[in-house]
Figure 1 (cartoon, rainbow, N blue to C red):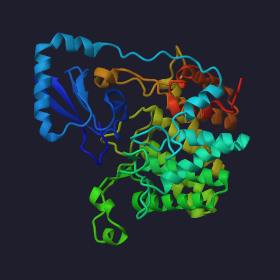
Figure 2 (tube, rainbow, N blue to C red):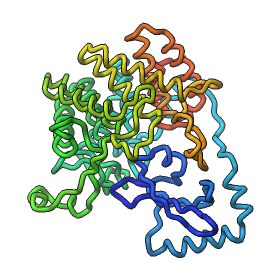
Figure 3 (tube, rainbow, N blue to C red):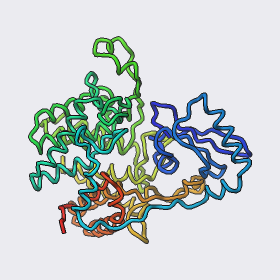
Length: 448
């Protein structure tokens, strides 16, 4: 599985000892990517005819592919029974335990902070947002200077380093080096939506005018390159192009820019609408707020089916429906729109989407949400028959459930939030920086 600006993921399926190549776009089918990705993008996986993995890895160059295929076919021919048995084994998960207290989890979140270059982990370096949200929230409660330093070090390194395009604007997807150099140059809408919101919140919390300026520059990029100014909504990404991004401003004026993938993803548009509404509030820009609402409504109306939630993208021919991420992201944006306008219709739509998720994705035995609704019989192939319980999205669902309980007065949403937190709590300590999602969902810090 891979991003659209690189070679598509190739899943080679063995049928009657012959390979049938299947290409998968990981953005359009995140449910497939979650189940079949082998170490990241791109993935090249070799499957049985039943859709079970028998081998694979990450990128395989074209010149090496014939020899790799020959080795896989030879192994499958000589060790068929063993490989089929291994492919059917249930994937095991690491043992989990509930965190003893928030102090322990805070350590888990920030232990991998890169004090020299900012961000979390080594390389490749991704813009991980939740720990910075947590640091801002903690700073707001405690005025802890260390939390402010974590945010400032990271935002300065990302916003004024290799991850940011100083000519056209916008953040790249990630960087190959720990100091944010050698960026993977695709610009995703979701990354820029998250970074826009982060810089706006940091500007307010840390009283930083330069972070507001960076947020404004991110917004200019998105509105210039990804926005549909006429009808509203935002395209999913702008492709990578090593040659184009090596040029300065003068050379770029005479060079064709990288193409834009005009797919409108429901969850990504929801996140961008929320970030734009927040920016409109900061700038006191009525027209910007109106564009955010128009965009949100366009994508919602195009993706929503009464009783069927929202589809993954605005494409009737090739859009998967019933993914938890999309329902939660869109419900959150609807609540933001309700907060900005007071229009009860937005609140009602948020309720409808959450009720759909509760009806089709709730785990009645252990609590929490599965990542997708029950697949149809024709979709229940190989690992696609599994339903996973995503840690991050369940934490985000808790926050949406709390907001619904507060705005509607329906305490059943609170009860579901409590049960969801209990379901994901044992996983938090194993999540590294992503454990920040749990702490943000849980609320005020507990030290005992």
